[in-house]
Length: 82
Image (tube, rainbow, N blue to C red; front, side):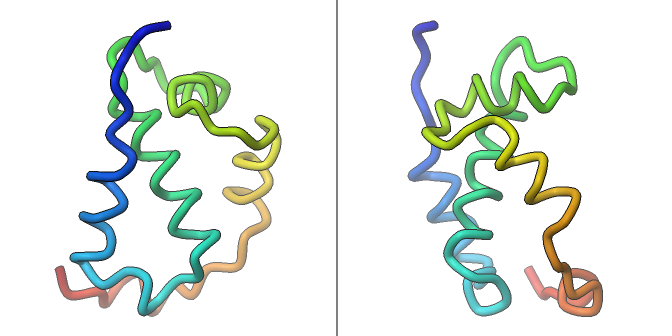
C-alpha cells in the first residue's frame, strides 16, 4: 500500500486543540492513529482497516482494547472548547 501518512499533521491539530491537557500521550497517539486510518481512501468502517491504514506498529487488538476498555471522562469530552 502506497500512501502518505498524515499523522504528524493530525497530532499537531490535536495539540492545537489542547487535547493533551485532557488526555495522556498514549491516548493522543491512539486518537492520531484512529483519525489517520478513518480519513484514508477506501475506509469502510472496520477497525482492522483503521489499523492497517494508519500503519500502527502495535497489534490490531490494542486499538480495540483502547476503544472498549479505555477510561473516558465524559465531562471533559463534552466541554472541550475547540
